[in-house]
Every structure is written in C-alpha cells, then in structure tokens.
Length: 366
Image (cartoon, rainbow, N blue to C red; front, top):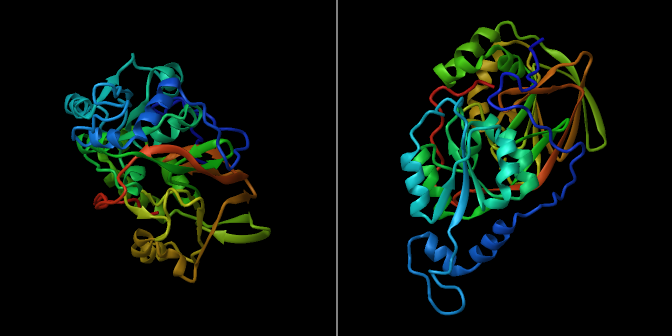
C-alpha cells in the first residue's frame, strides 16, 4: 500500500481542516482587509486598478485610496519555485500592491502570523501548496492571488488564470476576487480532485524530485508503467440516501474542473458550483482505460456504460481494507473517507471571462 504522506516529505507540513465543515464558512476578517474590501466596492477603485484616474468627487480620492499589502509566499520546492520574482514584484507594485516578504516558514504559519498586516495573500506554488494553505485562508478571510509555479497547476486552469507567473500577477491587480468552493475529506481541504485506486497508487509511486524534474511527462511515464499492475477493488458508495457496492479501478470526487494537467472531472464542473462531481471507472480490463482517455480529457467519461457518474454534495466511500486517498497529488488520508463540499469557502483573484490556459502536453491519464 502506498505510504500516506503526513507532511514529512511535502513542501509544507500538513494542516487539517475543520472536523466537520458547515456549508457556510464564517470569516474572521483582518482590519486592513475590511478596509480594503470597503474601498474596492467603490467604482473608483476599479478605475484605479485598471490604470485610469479615479473621479475625484466625493470623500474617496486617488490619493486617499490605500495601497494594498500582499503577503507574498513562494514554495521553493515547487517545480518552478526558483523562478525570478523581480518581474512579479514589479507587476504587483504597478497595480498598487506592495509585496510583504517575511522570512521563509510554513505557509500556514506565515498567513496566521501576518494576516492582520495584509490585505491579500499571493502564493506561488502548485496545487499541493494551495491545498495546504486553504485552512489559513478560510480562517483569515484573506483573498488569494495564485502564481502557478507547480507541475500541473490545475486550479489555475480551472479559474482561467494565466500559467505564466508574471501574467498571473497582472491578473491579481486587474481582477476582483471571486468566491470558490473547497472539497473536504476526513478533515483535509482540496481544490480539485480526491480519489482512491489507480491515481492514489500513482501518487504513491512518484517522488517530489521526479515531479520537479520531469513534470507531467514523469506522471505519464509512471502511469503507463503502473497501468498493467492496476487491479480492481470493491468500494461501498453512500450518497443522497443510497448505498451501492461496486467493483472499480478508481473512484474520484471532484470539487473543481481540471486535474492531472488538463484532465477534466466533468464537462459541466466548475470550482464554484456548490457540487461534487463523482465518477467511478468500473472497467473490466486495464486497456479499457486507454480507450477512455479522450473522454477523460473532455470530461464526458460519465457517458460510458462502464463509468458511474453523478453530482452530489456529500459522499462516503468505504473499502474492506484502508486505501490511501489522493488529494491533488498528495496522499493525505485513507478510507473510510467522508467527502463534503464547502461552498464559497475562499476568494481567489481570477478573470471573469477569457481564454482557457493551454492543456499540458502530457496530462495525467486519470
């Protein structure tokens, strides 16, 4: 059985979410964040963000608008965590955001320590980094700006945030934060997808060094090596008053839209729809997974006869023996697994409309 990662080898130590999340997440707003929120509601703030000269009438003037302060944290262990930051800092400052960069530490500890002195958090890393910071973001109420520096960057893809870090920084200063949901499993938050079976076995096979060196190419190589060793297992599914026992090779519970560098949970899934998208690959032979690849990329796998798919807000998965649960590439817990959606749990700077970032050339197969 793959080893469950308890934070010893992850870029940051693992942080737990609430024991039982409610559907409405209370926010503890930092004083400066409250002030900034009030200012940003004024149309002249939007004018200023976009480089225009605000209307000087009324009590709010361009000179009185406070500059926002951003807690800038970069995970140096992310695949592109060593990227130069000068252009990113310049892009933030050009948009009226002053980056605050404390001494390196666990990102959760940094957010908790500096929340009252900042108006937003700008976090550089991959999906694992974003997941790890989620509890602190929920508790502080601070909005998040994403610098996609990881391997797959699926949350950025789901939100149409540019995958170029400098362009992503400009997105932070030219857009308002939008509320997004979080998935929750056994006390752990996640943004994209949690699963048991094949993808969890794959996550257990990959090392951080391999992901950093090979990126999604390494994922693909490891996946095809593992594919022929994949074995089906029995899982009991409880949701919406129903109980089903099925034999599957993988069961996935999606909160967002994308995972694995461009694979799609469901063609209708979004990270802010208040729903979980479930699918189970109940295939008879491993080679059938290869035939499903195009559908998995489009998010239409639920149309296949050997794929079970539905939408819900809460689900429980039980297996005869404990099986590890993969949340966005990290093994964080095990079955029995209790999943919930936490609607509008955090706010992220993202464009309202735009061109979707390109898919990875070598997306994860599953």
